[in-house]
Length: 159
Image (tube, rainbow, N blue to C red; front, top):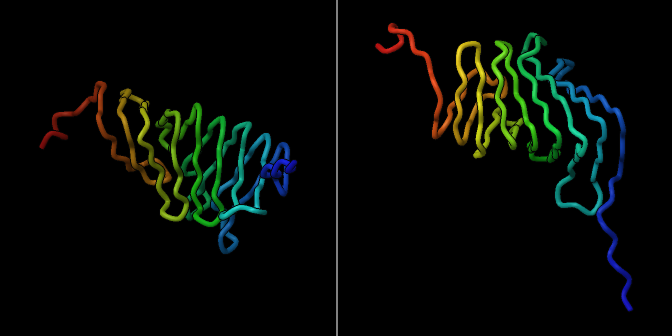
């Protein structure tokens, strides 16, 4: 009788974790998570699972907050610098505009976020819904597909 194969197990486990990401001594992001599981052994690419949710604050080149991302679950792939956020995902930019969806991918290398899922964007004056979005990671420039909702346009914006 063969013994069952070992399941994948985390190399590191942390609770109530705060991680600070810097590049050349410049603050780029902070990550807060209730639980962090890091997998580095017996895997093609090391990855980190955030099974109890997370909150990321992103900073611009002047180390001012540019946006935030929170979700109930996350998985980050170390080598490809890509993070998938799932379940009750919220992205908020410096203007207070909020993106809500069930799944989003943050491509850290290209400084983009994108999804094919349903999205809802709430601004000071409107609520826009759609299916699919691509944006810069600061969530200040974005494109949506299959848009529905009420969009207010001023007369001078129609030219």
